Image 1 (tube, one colour):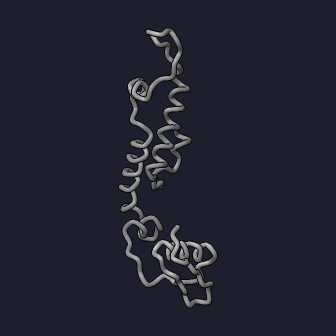
Image 2 (image 1 turned 90 degrees about the horizontal axis):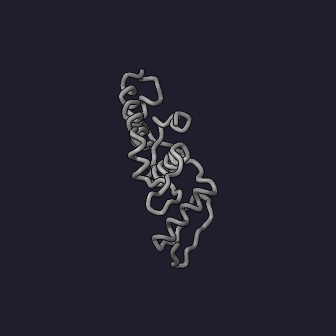
Image 3 (image 1 turned 180 degrees about the horizontal axis):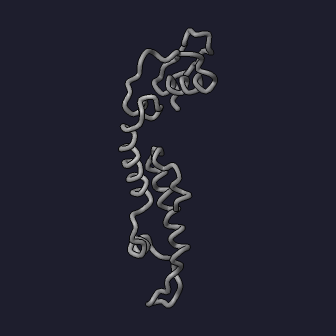
Length: 137
């Protein structure tokens, strides 16, 4: 599992990604422990998740990731102030971010937001006019 966990200290996982990691871990453990012979039917079957957890005494992959993240966050305050990670975790934003051009993706997202709120939007920034017609996404 070390290859899978490389750099996991900086990951921000959503529930869907956590689920995918648990599925991957169970797939690897099933491959390692193999199938079991059912005592009643006499047939081979895959191990259930509970059986895998009983056989594999280490914490699951999501717990390992969360503990590594907590350990890494403990190191960040000891980093120098010039490090970007330290500035992100401890620092406060200064000034304003320049608006800049939204680009085509920004206009599409802005149009979808406006349609969701039943608004026709005209930005006045030289961009396209997005008409919603009162529809929803």
